[in-house]
Image (cartoon, rainbow, N blue to C red; front, side, top):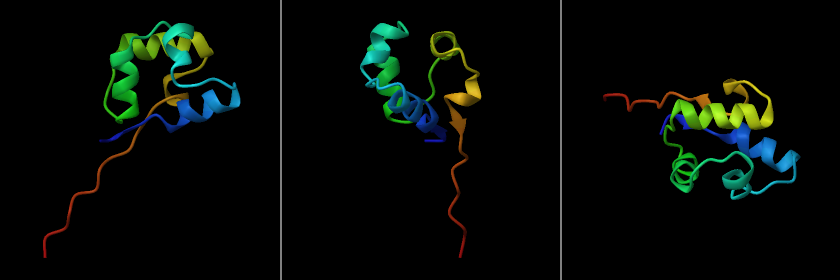
Length: 73
């Protein structure tokens, strides 16, 4: 999957929070947390809640990492 939430996970570590703390602190649902754990896209609404909670920009929590395509031989 092309989405990396590593920046968010690092932010949580620095704030001494667990991934499951996001459910309560940011008010996101468990399916969004599951999607982020699997590097899947989440809604803009979820990203907005995270940005408001941590007073940051989207690029501080998610990064688009293009997948490399296998080269033909």
